[in-house]
Length: 252
Image (cartoon, rainbow, N blue to C red; front, side, top):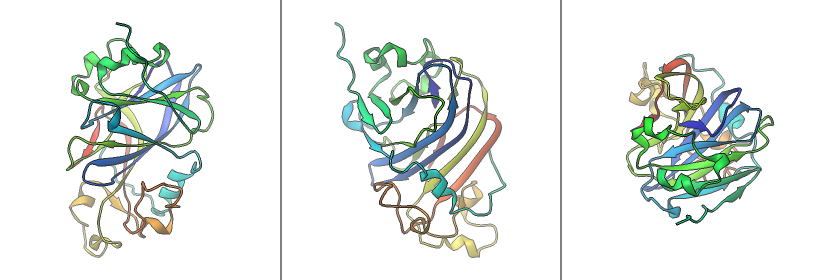
């Protein structure tokens, strides 16, 4: 879910990368273009395995602003197909140009700076997040280029990778939303996926995830990605554009 704590004028060009770093932790990188008239916070729900501060670790990608531009280099031919008592304050972290917090449970939003809380009543309309944790990024310079936001978290289901794609942009939860998303996925698979030589591709491609033609290390600066990207494996991309059901994407 991409939820903002206040009104925004528009958001577009959302890009999300994820990979299973080990049997427990998932890495996730998020970027978008945003325009707003005042500082806001962006809130991302996460199906965390632990409901405390140990569940999430932020990663500073301030030194790799072109992370997603480099990911796109693996897909020179665009994939045309789309499928669609006063509580203690929470710890804050300086992550490059952001101030970020991890909110372990919905009840812990009361411990967050009031300017950057979820709009009143939003979580009541999203019961699927009642036991989620939330990464909160405070975006002060909302009309400038925003470097990718990154973190790792202890995921609840080791057989699934989670993409937060539900939209809450105006304090309301709508049944459908306008998507302009590129979702990048990396799986532990051979350098050259065998489906490249098989008409119709493999099951992953038939589900809408198209492979890069080279391993990620040929077009991504793996050192600057700080362990989030595996140099030896290809990437997969799925593009979601247009008015689609307003829901998160889970790759199982």
